[in-house]
Length: 426
Image (cartoon, rainbow, N blue to C red; front, side):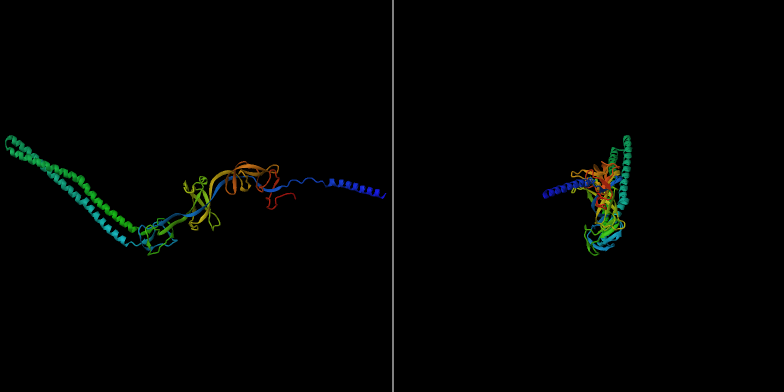
C-alpha cells in the first residue's frame, strides 16, 4: 500500500512539472533580432572643375648663370666685387695685369697710323700723279701723230706737183710711222694706268691699311680681355682667387647668377608631359617653408631625354626677395589637364577589386548599400572624376564602405569608429 502511494505521488509530480513546462515555453519564445544598421558617411557627387596634379622632385637652378673665364693667363690686379654682391651687365668685376698688353697695343697703333698715312698718299697723290703723267704722254703722242699726218699729206701734194724730191716724202712717212707707234704705246699705257695699275696700287694700299687695323684690334682685344665685366645682371656667387694670384685662361674666375627668379628643373614621364603646356600653374614645397611657393611651367622639352626616356620640364619660381637658394631640392606640384564640369567624388569612396576594376557603394531607396561599377578620370589626390557609372542624384558612401556587403542596411552619420562606433541595435 505504501509503495503504490509513493508511485502515484511521483507520477502526479511529473505530470504537474510537464504541465508547468508546457505553460512556460510559449512565454519564452521571442521574435528574431533585426539586422544591425552600419553608420557611414555619404554625399552626392560634386559637379565642378577638376585638374590633374603631377607631383615630382626638382632642383632649383638660377634663371641665368655666367661662369666667367679669362682669355689670357695673368695675375689678378684688382677685384671690384665681393661674393654675394649684386652686379649689373657691363659692370667691371676684375682687372688683370696688362702693362705688356697695353704696350703691344700702342705699338700696333703706331703701325696703323703709318698705314693710314700711306693709304692717303696713295689715293690722293701718287695714284693721281701717275695718271696725270700717262694722260700727258698720251696727249703729246697724239699731237705729234696729228702733226706728222699733216706733214705727210702736205708733202704728198708737193711731190705730185714736183716741188719736192721723193726722199722728203719718204722721210715724213717714216716719221709718221714712228709717231703712230708712239701714240699707240701712250694710249696703251694710259689705259693700263686707268685700269690695272691704279686698281693694283689702291688694293695694295688698302691691304696694308686693313692689315694694320687687324693687328691693332687684336692687340686692343688683348688689353680689353684683361678687364673682366659681367655679361648679365645678377649676384656674385663664387670668387675663388684673391688679388695677386694668377688667373689661368679657361678656368672660372668669377661666377654671376641671376636669382631674381629660379628654375625648378625636373624630369617626368612622357605620358604626363604630353598633358602639360607652358603657363600651367604649379607650386613647389621648399624645406623650411610652411606654405608652398607659386610657380609656372616655363618650358616643356620637345624631345625625350635619351638616357631616361623622360621629358625635362622647367618651372619658373619668382625670387625677388632672394629667400630661395640655388641647388635646393624641392617637391613640385604641377597642374595638368583640367575638366571644367566634372562629376567627382572623394578618393575615399573608391573601392578597387583584385582585378583592378573600380566601384563605389551607394545608398539605395531601401536604405541599403549597393555596389556600382564606375569609370574614373582625373585624380587630383583628394577627389576623383567619375566619367561613367554615377549620376549627381546618387548618394555615395564616402567613408565606412570598406567591407560592406551588398544590401547591408546603413544610416548616415559619423563613420564606424568615429564617434558612434559603427552602429547596431541599442
